Length: 253
Image 1 (spheres, helix red, strand yellow):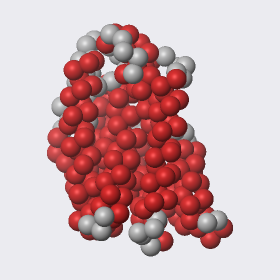
Image 2: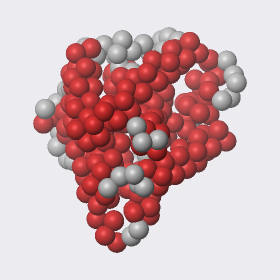
Image 3: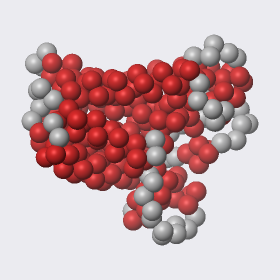
Image 4: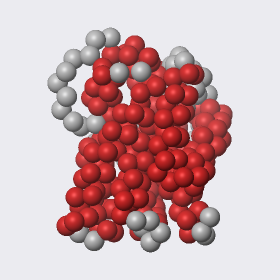
């Protein structure tokens, strides 16, 4: 488990962790059951930073700083994939052209808009939901949202297919045993249920529901799920949770 947490920290964050891990590619495949534990621990770091910010600034501004902190710690790892996926899928091109656009390092119009809309939604929803949550629950929310990026990501590893004979970094996620994914999801379910009771569970369940239709659409267009589409859904997962939880609390459910 220790090697898995180190490996995920090196791969998914900008933290300097100068500890070598042997056979890294194979460990990625055999350590997915720990991926939500890793993102939970990362969330605890971000939650603690958010808590500190609330002593210095109004809650709404501390919430914005939380998202900035997340971007700095992770290097916007999944946000880059979200932008690339938006550029590709909203280009109205053939599958080969969509794939090529997603691999282009340049940021297009739709990718820029996707990032603007994404941050507008997460910031706006956070301000809305703060009216219904205590400070303690807002801190727990930051922890859960960070954790859910990897919960959503790991869902798409189930029987994952990479498009055609194309090569890419996400090939390391092929052939992951389903039980490892289940363990990762069970951990996430326990955390969100403890933090937000049945509202948290319902909000979580929206993630695999959307994941089912999301992957079906991506696979239909591209013939599989390349890395950018995985990362895009990792970014969308906490947004799905946040939208659902806000609606439930807003209407007193």
